[in-house]
Image (tube, rainbow, N blue to C red; front, side, top):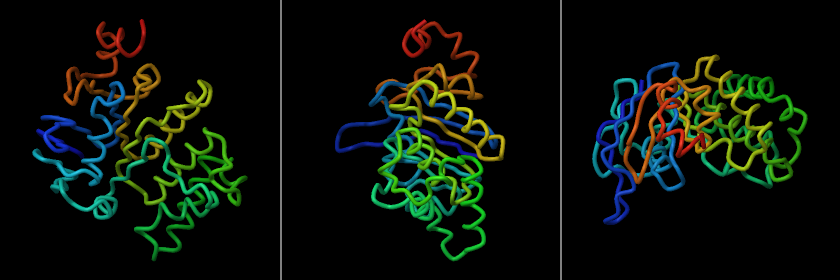
Length: 235
């Protein structure tokens, strides 16, 4: 579905990521592990069109998308749910959701159904649909950010650190929802520091260090890898 080959992104003379190869099959959950600044978010930004690759190819469903504008990439079926949620705090929950459907703004029936689907996934958002996004708890804001990402019916969703800053119980609920979204037909690329939670739901993973992939394998292989366990799982 998505094949990234030899991807390099430079900021001036600094290489944020170098020669990165990633592959995601339709229906998979694939996780990118690594500490802050390892290159996960830059990889996401390149895939979603927010950072221009210096080198390499990004192939999505048989078409090259590297260098395309972010709105064209959203229209092709890739949506990024950014780290830090990036909500509009003064706007209501409902208004934030509608912003996520901007590329389909003329398809009123489709948008209405998408809102209903998000409310079914996150009932609390329906309860609070007239509340401002800024008044929600951290967990509810993350639900809204994911809900907004789903509004354009993506084929592939890029989830950047969805567990960051959340209480352990909320993290568990969040990962249950991510699994449900996947079972409903959306392929997921997940960037996470919480390796323990991520590897429980992912099919495969890649470990980033200093802008390069140093280890890759199935979740079971990464969980059993001593270096990965020591660095990211603490066991």
